Image (cartoon, rainbow, N blue to C red; front, side, top):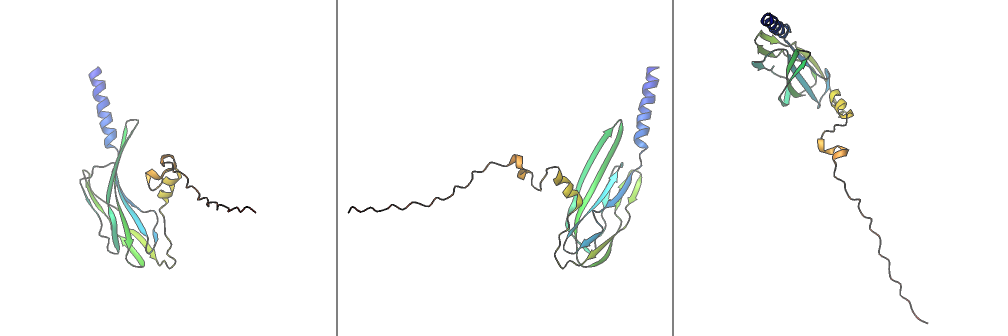
Length: 175
């Protein structure tokens, strides 16, 4: 009897892990970009095992950095969620409306594709710098762009001593 219950438990756990469908999506912090700024494009595979990632061809964009890959796995109450993210930092070559074509990833379930993504690039005569919203959120928790610049970890510095002007000696004469 114990063996049957144990067998049913293992089969149930195996089926719950298989019940999650894999998804492959593309995301950007904003879809309108001022020329001269960078855009982070992330391709995320959830609940699937990646075997081969084929990025899109970024025709009207210059790849500044990437691909950067990150992966995570989380188990909550016996449910396993895993994801793999490929990120690129792009800079537009010119002003206009452009499309980022679909990316492709091969999984055990077959090939998955992202949706095409429209990006509008506007002129930037004032040289405005756009910041991604997620970076500001990280800073609100006390993280700075450089970990060692956090106030708690700075080395104490001695205050600079003020230069005191030297007193001139007075000459005294006897009368």
